[in-house]
Image (tube, rainbow, N blue to C red; front, top):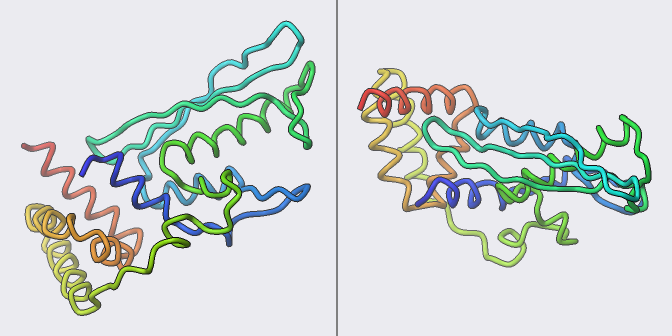
Length: 203
């Protein structure tokens, strides 16, 4: 499975309704919540804003490039967005605050395009399609508990090779793979990734 596909399957199915807000009957995910969620999964990710583009009618457009990174694996996506008012009309001669607000909105859209995180909000849906349309896959609780303990044992022993082998074994079983991963706390996830990446770097 490619890194892009793995990220998409992991984040596009997340229900972020508990993080959204409403303004003028529109649902949105704040840039801070968006980035916080992304950083929980891929803390090495980054973003970059380019200079605003101004058009002859004095309206402006901003752009943002998001890079999703996990060790040696990374990819980037770019999104553009006009500087708009609360009615989504382009603003003539926008000030610095309006440009800044547009950049943050553009960041959220760029993350959605790159990872699928919160993309269902832009589609006018109440829930991500995977959660709404598909029956919930069954998690093998005994298998998950077994693998969680195996990951913790390998982590305690700082056995990077064992950690990579465990990940390889589970990777094709997406339902249980994500269940195991989510059973580990963020500190454990980061330590596992660091050990596996150190093994890749030494190869």
